[in-house]
Length: 320
Image 1: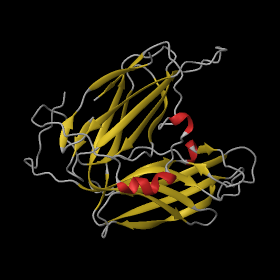
Image 2 (image 1 turned 120 degrees about the vertical axis):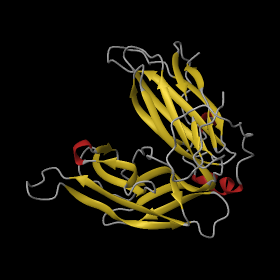
Image 3 (image 1 turned 30 degrees about the vertical axis):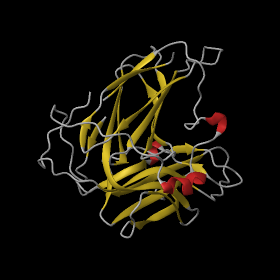
Image 4 (image 1 turned 60 degrees about the vertical axis):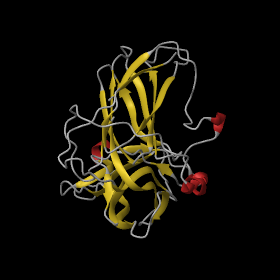
């Protein structure tokens, strides 16, 4: 895992240099107590990750990228900055009258401070729409987040842009390809904020609101999480990668999909300086449709403390 404390400056390629590990983070921030009822995790089976802990017979090896550091173009005069880490995104109150799942496409993004482009945390084209199940009573459906290209910094304020649509069944050739659910932008400010916190915001649109949950982190850096699958079954793995940041119990999904040996996964997580990033990786052999028994599930987790620069290499295995 690579940690870069230069805010909106690109991280250089990892190279050996100086540096040291920071102590682990203190107890959970006071804000976490107030927001614990809003956490996305479940208390089921006292598992803070709300993941299966079935026994695993096989081992699948993964590698996370002793502590060294990278060369610093700022000659060591680096500083942290206020950052946003998105946790959850979902539509709410949507009346889905059509049978089956809702087919959602669109984007949610913040401006990138390195290049004049959007920094997406959700993006789907109409050709690869997201098929989501809408709860009939609440009209709620969760949209899986993706990792941003870089950490999202806040210089007193940050702009969120969004547009979500739903596919129409028989669109006309010259007509719109989908019905608009919500479109717009909103500004979030930390001008008078001195402590990190979990924020829940509801954004209202044409047909339904959009619920956004994110961590507003004061004095934070961006941590690059690189995962490589060293060994896996021939059929591949159903892989889930999760994170927790800065003492909060809210689970951040980083990757959910199929992975094979040699697969590399890269993500970015914002974390308060001198705090920790907790990672958990879960895998099950990909179901080939022939097995009649429940496939074994295994998990591996660890914590990584942060400083302004540093690389932590760890290798682990999923299973017993």
